Length: 355
Image 1 (cartoon, rainbow, N blue to C red):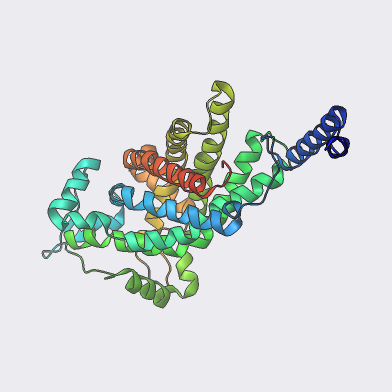
Image 2: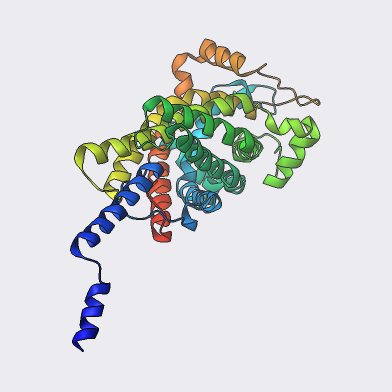
């Protein structure tokens, strides 16, 4: 028994050898953490929740939740932005030109409920959800890929790099999703056209899609895509860049963990900045998309985004570019809050790393 005990003790590493082995292990883990940008002292393992497709699907699901919750504000915003332009006029039975009265945000929303029914507040929700199948998934995974590329293994991420990633991700995502956005605008405006006594242009999202293609061909689906892409670039510069920057700033300065409090504060800031930067381009985009077209699909009111911008300012003043700002802001804040809380919570429940 003594011999066996001595042999077992001889097989055990000495205290110095154990310490050296532990030191070597810690050094290896530190080198691995430095190479991957992680700060935790643990081996880095691949997790499916951090994969491209899982991130894509989670972002689409979170965006669908946020869109459904805040969609009535988007419809109200679109109706407000059209007020005052030529497309918002109609001719009555006696040949006199009539224009829908200017109404504020709450009056517009209550007017829709009174004149068209409460469910009409979600008119156009189907193409809006289709849009997020492309838009939200692409913008998140593109931003994440650009962020990792520019960071190049470093823990810090400068503001200009975040801004560049946000603009690039937003522009690419919106260009791909522009057809769904065009269909959504056409469907959203049908209730107002009926209230003005005009003949309906489309009856559903599928009908709107067919009508757009029949008038302007496949490329007609990208009508208004230039201001649309410009708007998305500015909105994502405000949303993605602000959320990412503010979140890590709060965590660094306050020592708070990656928690709901940080997510709420970051998303509120992101919604405000996104609404401020994106509303003028959103007004131009909405008006170009909503304008009537000739048999060739060419717009009858505006030659392009610059012409629409000049006409809007010239006829209605500079602040016409901020029509619908209040519902945009009120929508952006809960949309951003709902999206980022859902996105972060779903990723955390799947075991993904913090975004």
